[in-house]
Amino acid sequence: MGPPLGGLEVRERAPGAREYRVRGGGGAAARAAGAGALGAGLLALALAPATPLPAGARAGAFLAALAGGAIALEALLSPAAESVVVFSGLGVQLESRGRLGGVRREFLELEQIEAAVINEGVTATAVLPYLCFLVRGSERLSVAFPDLRPGVSLKVLREVRRGVCDALEGVRSPEEQDAAVRSRWPAAPGEGLAAS
Image (cartoon, rainbow, N blue to C red; front, side, top):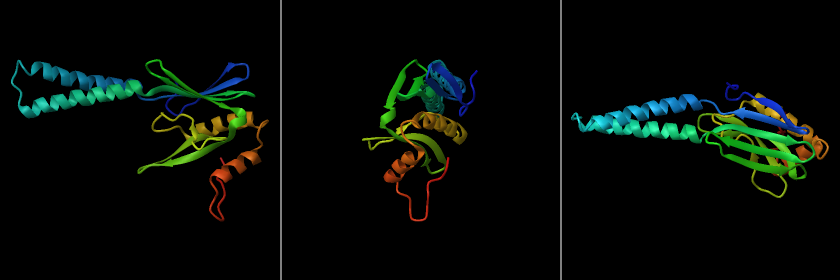
């Protein structure tokens, strides 16, 4: 069993390639709960022709089967693990491995990375930190660990960012990274960037 969601595994993939991996959590429990609800709902629907069920009970069984199927499907489609792989002198690869075996990759060349930033996403109920990369010539941010919910801990994000910044050090100084961030997101007068 791997570390819980938010736990970090660091390993050397090859000489000069360090992987920072976070495994998705709750997959087995969610699949079991979904399968249970799906099974109970389908059983009730299968028995419905043999035993007369009130319309409300039949609707409840159908909704239980539908909800169970949705929970099980979501658990199967959620990522099993997501990684940031730092290739010394080359760049950073963002990976997402699905529970059904699919792998999605995005490679960012070291010279194109302006900065690695820990940013905050705000929802109605929470403020979630995330690691993103400012890429030269692109308006969109490349986000590390985008599909893990409820998110990755700030402690883990700081460790991964430190590893990325160590790789960037020969290409872009910390001052150049700060300048890149400030050019994209100018601070309000009297405010600075939070240290991470």
